[in-house]
Amino acid sequence: GAGVSQSPSNKVTEKGKDVELRCDPISGHTALYWYRQSLGQGLEFLIYFQGNSAPDKSGLPSDRFSAERTGGSVSTLTIQRTQQEDSAVYLCASRSRNTNTEAFFGQGTRLTVV
Amino acid sequence: DAKTTQPPSMDCAEGRAANLPCNHSTISGNEYVYWYRQIHSQGPQYIIHGLKNNETNEMASLIITEDRKSSTLILPHATLRDTAVYYCIAPIYNQGGKLIFGQGTELSVKP
Image 1 (cartoon, rainbow over the protein chains, first blue to last red):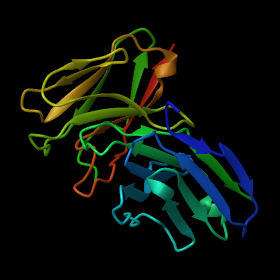
Image 2 (image 1 turned 90 degrees about the vertical axis):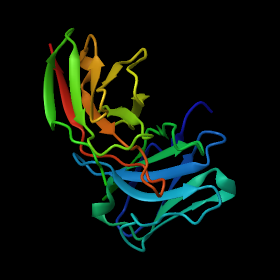
Image 3 (image 1 turned 135 degrees about the horizontal axis):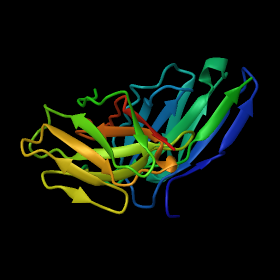
Image 4 (image 1 turned 180 degrees about the vertical axis):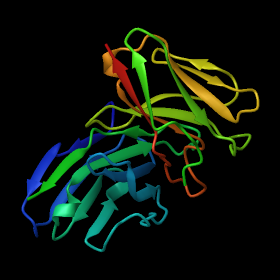
């Protein structure tokens, strides 16, 4: 794949349900980030994976949020017992190990909790 | 975390050059200046980056002052599709490797 791929592009779920959001980073990229963006707001950091190191989870807003990255590639962001305030666009980005290179973003998953 | 200062909003007439300023007075000698933009409802898009020299690509030009404390992104012939939030980021990653975004400049290109 040429870029970062996220699925689904849109997700509508009922309050209280669990959701899983998927991110396929660019092949060979060791770093992967999750952000979310509420309507009209800036980018809010959620979690950062780098290779085999322990992820930086400092941005996860509550214990209902979790993420994993299997085999150093695909990542899944899970939100349990969704609330209406979880409605936002969830963005994934990846970059190579070199910290002097740009990060590339996916087009995001728009989550709506009704 | 963001260490850059940008005006919150700017207007530009279609077809004219858009010059977006950014202050990054605390930048270190080996830290690059990056620019991204985010068009409504899309993921942020990389535009350009530079260290000391001015840079140009098919999207934009980046002018960095000699003291590296500020830079200007130039869109030479702005179109309506350039309406977006433009983020100047320096450094792009903090010591922990986290990607840093500030509030950016909302550029409105008007006909």
